[in-house]
Length: 445
Ligand SMILES: [Zn+2]
Image 1 (cartoon, rainbow, N blue to C red):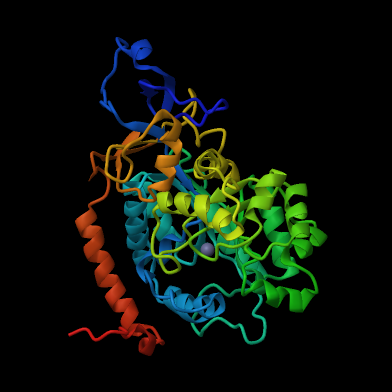
Image 2 (image 1 turned 90 degrees about the vertical axis):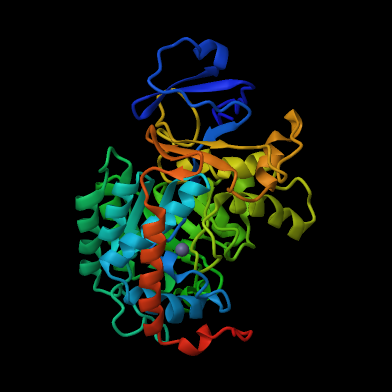
């Protein structure tokens, strides 16, 4: 399943990889007989481009399920900021390995991480485990009244300090590891950004030719901006002249029709997270030709980084809410998780489809389980999309390097990562100020 310009699906297809790139995509017969250092037999399997998660918080991996029962303002300011304030670089390193292990085992080869404040740990983990990713410093320089982060929170700094922290990450990590690891600029959430920070981030990102990741028009937070500046966050950004094609706007669940028009006019990109606050004008964005990628957000928000679940959710949630059966066809859902996601991250020249010259990021999926059988030629995409889980991914390859083969990890010591994750989570959770909310609702005997 190539996801190339013609969306070709090759029955009995084959992919040749040379070094970190795809050398050829053709029928098995056409490629048989060419010298190969290694052949992977994927007979009866689906081979497709690695999935691209357009929004994933690596450092929150150890906060799994800590905020499932509260609204977005409490989730952010009380639950997650308190958790992130306790993280060391070492904790972020292990959290990222845990997050990448989950993504590699479910077929995600590239992700956009909007960031936190222990991001050297994230860079180190990505470099080591072989996953592809782009991450940021999640900048904020303004605490609106009543929405101050908790004491000790490392993210609230002056405008200059915020820009310097992000620039430091760019210098240390951007386009390292064979350009597998990139750094973007980042802004945390809309109520905590000043005009100066918007302008500064725009200038830096243009100078360094990179992306800006920003949580934008998030239901539950967007109202605070409206109260403050008298317009929507997108209108405010357009008025400041900062919005552009290198902006990746996550969530956008509160976008109005006019916001959609503005986003399209500036060719800004959107990261839709159907598992975390999913309603919104996403069909309208697609209709207008806005680039919309898919993300899983955070294990603290929806408890999973399996992109197959996000693909299945996006293919069902909008049409069920609006009672329009073909509103978002399965083919579109798969594009959002591959080629559109790559475009959203500014990476479409290198990844997102199986085409000669692109990076060899691909996955092998077993379509013969009870959840995907029977599959006909006419239902091949629909079955892949509706199964809703990535447990059938057998092998995951990034940059021509096998990260998982027949469900065995080659770069991550999963048992050690799980043990370290449990150890860190135990330490962190006992220090969280909201202990009473962490009691089980049912008696645990
Ligand atoms: Zn997020």
